[in-house]
Image 1 (cartoon, one colour):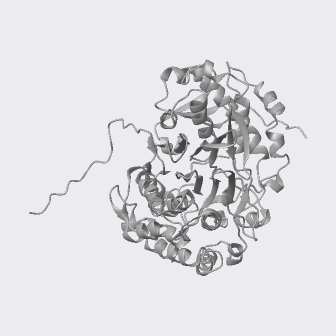
Image 2 (spheres, rainbow, N blue to C red):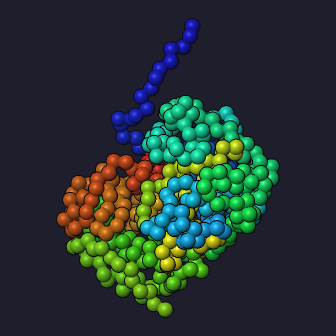
Length: 545
């Protein structure tokens, strides 16, 4: 007898509670299949770096709204003894100057365009995978690509949150070259529970696996992107790809409540979280209720002060007018803390240290193994589906990080080979020089705000990682404007409004409030293992054994 097919309604009218995961080997991502790709490597005898790279490759297939084979990435690796940083963000094509864009888009243009080939810098994510595998991996690089290749070829059923964002992007991007061919099968976005295959990306992943990335940076894939770019008004060349290298960097840090938060240095915005925590360190936050108006107001004001400096000073390090050390100077941060009025919201301006925002597309993942290795990894196409341009032969969905440049004189002015201001930031927490937590929160300028809010909940108020992840969030935009999640206490919302915060209460948590993944070391990894959390604002999952 033929089985009756039920057409499910995939919306859920009920509140669903996630619980922390406890395991000695863990992978946490915003898509279950990505987490399981990493877990497969751990079960095969690989380490946390192998798991992270395999998960990152799989995520380009299963969450293409947020990242792709044309993304950028940043990473921090705790190798069991020390913390290492990797900057795999892309550089501008050699043709890019302010005059290049003004000739094409007019004197009134203030930045490279939001979409299209002239928003694409050289993607760095694949180079980041290779660099991680070469320095820390145990398994052959080709093995790490196997789950992603299988998912691209056989396909997967679309989950709820990814589908919602996929469908929302199609009207804007359907005219971009290669987009409809790749991401609008049947002339539309796939529905929830519908099978999506991406065989062109499987071809690319095979070439990347067999060549250990060389096909991407100088081989067939680079040549195909050069041809595609030229056909569609861009100026990216294979030579731009050949000269690209991911860069190992020393993380920057700030102490807070007996712990140390580490971030990747500029050109990323991780320093914003360090500045804000440095300001909050001057206050006894725990004296106020965790979800009360005083605690939330103080965090918002500290974050605003941090962004005021970050947006003025942070860029490619060689172009910055002030140093990281100057921006994090304890005396300077104390002087900034004194500007906060506990009864009134303020619109702060940048300070003088002593001698713009988009809804985005990003995935964050973290992995840890029982030998003590922990990985904090973030990968992004910037805005949803990035530039919207997809090279069709290899399925390379290209980011739009070039839009982060300015055409005006200043630290972030576009120039050949320069990296733009970046929003994506992995984070890591230590205590007394030992690993404590690998974590991150996705979502454009929400990222340092998410780092701040979740850490305060854990370190000031003792909330477990999953509770800190699930708690309602706010998001600072500009001036006096903030967004707050609908789940925030009405009394707190009213109290913030009374202090002058201009608020919008938002139901769309994915876009406005980011999503996090957390792995907290519970003790000896071989004995107690880890406590892991995954954000319910996306389709994700923490898995382990």
